[in-house]
Image 1 (cartoon, helix red, strand yellow):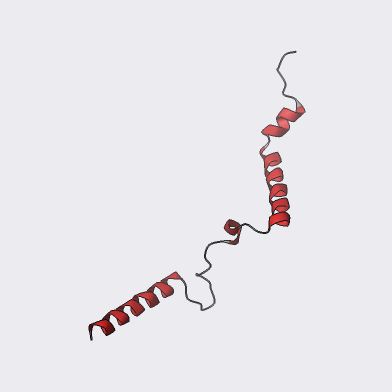
Image 2 (cartoon, helix red, strand yellow):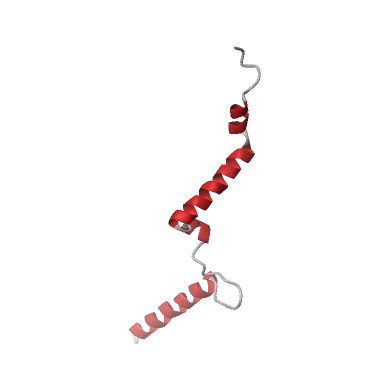
Length: 75
């Protein structure tokens, strides 16, 4: 039997759409069983809009605190 035409199964397995759908189903099942993955939740969530300090604000606060404690130690 010549292999001129791929079978339906071979075409399906080569399809990016098929792999995308299988991945979506896998994520939904995994989420239902184990909860949401930490990488799906996003980073550390320290950079939020709405007036809250972002990374830069926290970094500057830490530098100020370190500078203040260093000057208190010298006195």
